[in-house]
Length: 237
Length: 196
Image: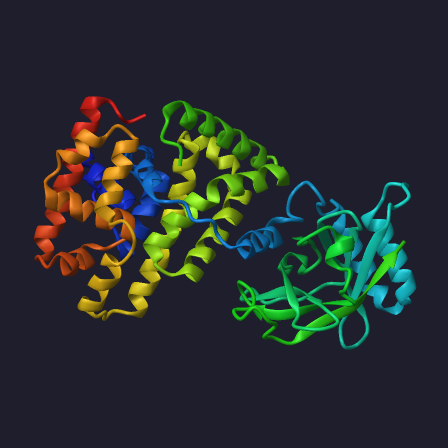
């Protein structure tokens, strides 16, 4: 691509924004654009000319699962629950946790999640363990909250083309997805939105489970991969 | 979305504020941004990809990207919805690129039917969009074939060769319609001072 000719650059920018610049030429143009301010400005000018035309499209509300998935991938990466800055220091320490009793794991993980010395208003917790009964994940929520926070309490291995999906396991009927919680791997925190506040959303849900799914989550709406971790819903009130 | 200029201004100010707060990792602002912009962005993706699951995936990827890179919006100096639309459109076009590699052959007849069957035509949308943005005169000044080719490329994501098949014209002819149409649109818009 010759970048000397401003008229040609403008034509390329127009084709890029319109979408007719395709294939390898498009990828090459994107690379050039990053290093060339004039080209970037030309693209922005064409975006301002053409993209507002798209506002004539009748809006379509996306299904709720899209937002749930977005939340599953963004919650926990921000300032709100956040990873403790010193999480690296905790890792080695947590590794020994499998040896500690389940009850102790509860107490310790709760202390980490709620550092303030306030009395909880009523907390739901779920310790999710693998087949070896070692606790791996802790899910918790205030009973009035519409979010469930899931934290790794031991390192979680996850391949980049796989996802972890969290499910409610009702007494009767099929598991219901709460979204992706891949952000817990390897030692992080994920947050998922509940359909109602935790008390009501998990009322008839005795247990939660996490399954291994293709990236993007289960294509069928039901768990397709192996169930890696599961645990009973406990109410601390 | 809003076509009344005062409402548009108000909406843009609101979206800018939400983007700024999203850059500070404000989850509530991010949720509100999603509520405000996702129906428009989903419509854009659906139209180009013509497949709900692919459009959902693009929307998801785009908003995850917005969450991580909202701070770069400030540097982009664009209208907020334009910035968001460009993210979604670029991801859609990437998807199409991948699809093109996978399925090279496509039945021309069948393709013609799919495109014609979807709600308002691309041309109607182009005119409606122009109406809303006072660039109507410039869009209308284009030759009918230029208008049609630009509308199909913009709204349906058709490539030059797909345009040629769809419009049943040689590739070179279609390419020059698009190129000349864009040049004409630009000089007309520059004259009336539409570029913001």
